[in-house]
Image (cartoon, rainbow, N blue to C red; front, side):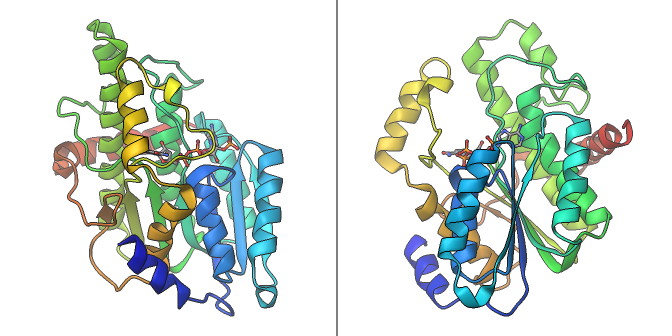
Length: 308
Ligand SMILES: NC(=O)c1ccc[n+]([C@@H]2O[C@H](COP(=O)([O-])OP(=O)(O)OC[C@H]3O[C@@H](n4cnc5c(N)ncnc54)[C@H](OP(=O)(O)O)[C@@H]3O)[C@@H](O)[C@H]2O)c1
């Protein structure tokens, strides 16, 4: 698929189409690589969102160099943090302003890597979970509801897809009951990864059902060696598994990024919204496939925003 996508992208041009791409978590790794592809294609406006201003400025400089002159590209770095409700809502306002309410592509790559423990944010939720999952809901939902998406827009999330934590409860999204049961840090880490996947699958599906005029994609990246990828952040035996996996099947951000960019700009229209790291269509995980679970989660996530 990677070579098909690469070949197809050589024939794509966004020049003259006045497209706006917003790339959240675009200062590094997969997000920055996706931004580079969009710049090469002649996208006319790219907004990069992240915390680190120096890295943001470096990405903008690279995008300007890659963009064809005729694109007269507009570039903006929006600085913000996505680790609690208040900062997420402020980020939505700032993104809306930077994109003039006409986002064609909203791409979310922000990383909240599980820790195997719970480090609570100002709202009482696990901080890594807030960045990885809650913030993606807040951005996608509020930008959709506020009319900040252009007609036919696509929203795309890069994060592990299709896993299931079958006993997940919408009333314990931080997995406090799992931690209290005395499980190991590695098991907690694995449960947190599955939880993130359930939550992301479930609300993407609800967004697809509730707002069929837009497309909400969720893609697993597999193993991508982004600049800050560090096996030492994985607990226990997972360090070794991830290290071997990277050596055997890992890829680079720029190679991987051809797949999501192909999906958004060149792939034939299809009803598929969930994909593996080779862009093969996937089903929802078991937990997210259950409409009752999705409804309970949706109500909980909307409550999180409305508590503001
Ligand atoms: N790489 C892989 O092999 C792999 C495998 C499975 C899943 N994933 C998932 O794919 C996504 C992209 O991964 P990646 O490897 O490209 O990650 P990465 O290189 O670490 O980049 C993560 C991005 O998230 C931003 N970010 C982190 N914390 C943030 C916060 N609190 N608020 C706002 N922005 C924040 C970072 O920017 P600043 O530091 O500037 O804020 C950076 O731009 C992540 O969700 C990751 O979990 C990756």
